[in-house]
Image (cartoon, rainbow, N blue to C red; front, side):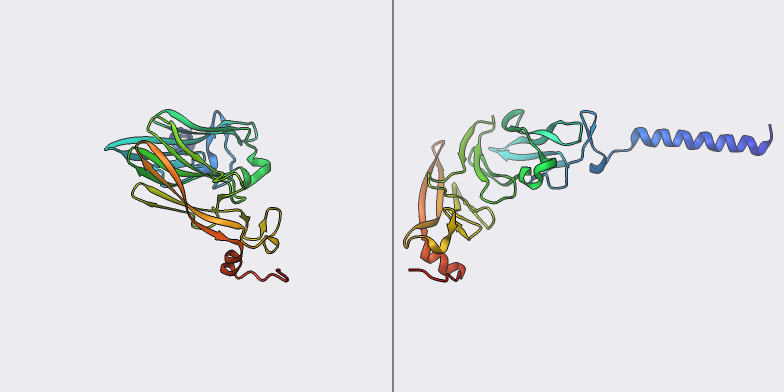
Length: 244
């Protein structure tokens, strides 16, 4: 066999070996993630969790300290369909599940089915955070859980008259053991009870600030400020064609 042909065979063999080693050791990035043997195709931002220690497009691991001990929170999409989209989302703390939802349809619903976990805060022995279900607005729930995944507070409807968290603005603040939430009955600062806010009766309360104070293992809710429709219209600079 000619020397040149031998060298060519050796070079080809080395290239093949290199490709095999590369394929077996290369860590797939988000665009090539596989779960349950299925290539993941969820859009960026489908699962959002604040300040993850480890994360990719479908998973987040987050560590928080409660009473001097580390608590492990995990958030993940699971049960992937053949089209690469998940059917279910789960959240757990120290292996204890505290949130699950199945029947997801991100491929059709898009951002309506995005899952967003933000505003984490430790208050004494509990973890407080907000969960926003999609991006349509007024779809946020205030949660508080203990380190075993028990839900101590789950508040979406602040009252029984469509008062929901105003999650398209700055809506939450923490101070010591107190949480303050900004809530509204007005959709996108325009619609109130299905029609223009300009048609609302004078004096109707359309927004408010609520506090949740944690003490002795419980949360106590209090309405601390009300905003009526006339004040709302003035503050927003809304021009109403006719308002009696």
